[in-house]
Amino acid sequence: MAIIKNAVYMKEVELPFCPGCGHSQILPQLDKAMAKLNLDPRKTVLVTDIGCVGLSDQYFNVNAFHGLHGRSITYACGLKMANPELTVIVLIGDGGLGIGGTHFINAARRNIDITVIIFNNFNFGMTGGEHSVTTPFGGKTATTYLGNIEYPLDACSLVQAVNGGFAARMTVFDKNLSDVIAEAIAFKGFAVVDVWEYCTAYYVPRNDLNKEKMMKLLETYGFKTGIVHKLERKEYIEAYKETYSNQPIKESKQFSLEPEFTNNLTQKTGIVIAGAAGQKVKSSATVFGSSAILSGLYATQKDDYPITIMTGHSVSEIILDRKEIFYTGIDKPNYIIAIAPEGIGKVKRLIQNMDENSTIMVDENLINLLPETKAKIEVYPFRKTANTIDRFSITILSIATFLARTDLFPIEALKKAVTLTQKKVIAEINLKAIEAGANLAHEDISVK
Image (cartoon, rainbow, N blue to C red; front, side, top):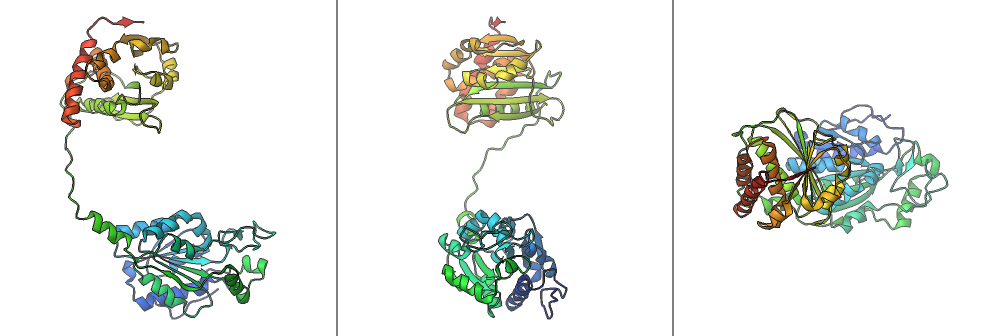
């Protein structure tokens, strides 16, 4: 075990790594780099994840963040963006690089001002020596015992390919390692130092690796050493501030949903609106839920629709109750408002589960599409009536009919929610639809 002497930021403690492990040689070089830059320990953060190198942060007298394997770069970016005054240094192994590869690419592409030091020993050292994204071709590991058939990832070229800021490749033998690490930390933008080193527990014994063979590998792959890429360009956080900080804040319409109406609800009630894309099901359901809140009720909304636009079903499930609602699913609806074939097809099983105490309010053209059910069926000319106002108003119109029939709370609450939450032009159309829908409830209807 190595004991680091004369350290500035590191604690003079015994490190936990295997004898000869490169980690014990790289960490003192990081300490020297930090000392060279005279970093404020209160504003310096070491970020690590799982792996042997993930044990390192606890041996430095600076802030530390330890998280999930492959996610250290995401944490580092969050820390830096939350407090740009911090110096954020990521310590990862080649295992973490592979697992978090997309985070590495995007942090470099964005040029976020963090420094990533890769402790690259060509395998997963903590979990038994499995191969990683940097294992050389032919390298023998616990998972490639006949020799690796994949070519190694070049982290430096990856940074260069996405126009990241700074990339250097070093070995544990380089006398100027601390100087290059210091330059990477001081660089304004994304910086990586890929340090080739030894895993004496697994990779070295299986591959008889030594300094000469390591240098030969570099030559074989044409991997340059030293600073291989440096691009001065705008750092992400600075660019973000320049673009967004001085933008005028768009004023949004403010409104309150403080209760001002009464309600007649006697039990928790589940309502399903089964419609189609283009019928404004989701937005109308939100207005309906808002009107319930204005009437002193709790309301939840759960929507279901395909990823496509203006095609397929659109279903909203609304639950109303006098007390707080913790489960938002509806297994057996009290009411279904059926206004489109697509919606009926989607909620077919719910319709079949309904009992004699439940009601389906269905458009007159869709009655033959309903599956067998025990629910009471009420038939209305929803589409025909909506077409006299605006065909997109069918959902809010049918909701108004539902409210007028059930008297769960006043129709005036629905009107108030429309005026509060919608633009004037749309609100005017929907208010007409609400009046028409309420009138349908008082006409002769077909009940089955």
